Image (cartoon, rainbow, N blue to C red; front, side, top):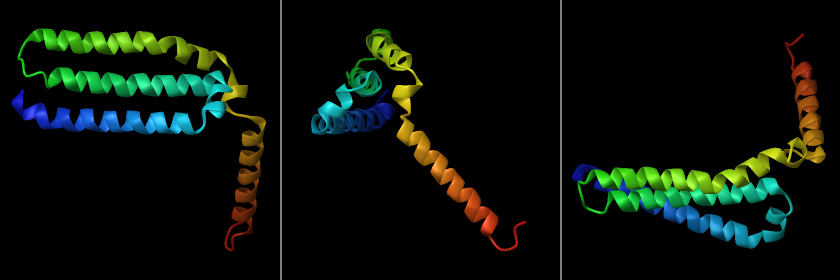
Amino acid sequence: MQEWSDFYVALGGAAAALTGLLFIAVSLRPREIRTTPLMVGRARSAFYAFATITFVALLALAGTGSRWVGLAQAGVALGMLGASMPFTVAAHRSGPAARTGATTRRSWRRGHWCFLRLRSATPGRS
C-alpha cells in the first residue's frame, strides 16, 4: 500500500482542487445554472464525483491494510452514485431542448455551411 500513497495524495489533492474550482464557477453564475435542470444536474454530479474521489483517496491513505477500507471505498462510491442519480435522471429527462438550444443549432448549421463553402472554394477541389 505504501507504493500507492503518492498516487492517492495526488488524486485527493486534484479532486479537492477541482471541487474548489467547481464551487467558484457555481458561485459566479448561480442564476444561469439554476435556470435548467441540465445545468443543476451537471453541477451536482460533478460535485459528487469529485467528493467521491476525495473520500476514496482519504480512505486509501488511512494507513491500514484492512479489507474494510476497500469495502468502505466501494460504499462511498455507491452512495455517491445513488445521491447523484436523481439529478442525472432529471437532467436527462429535461429533453434535448435543454441540452442544445435553438441558437446553438443555428450557429452549428451556419458554421457547417461556411466550412462547406470554404471547402468547395479551395483550389484543386472539384
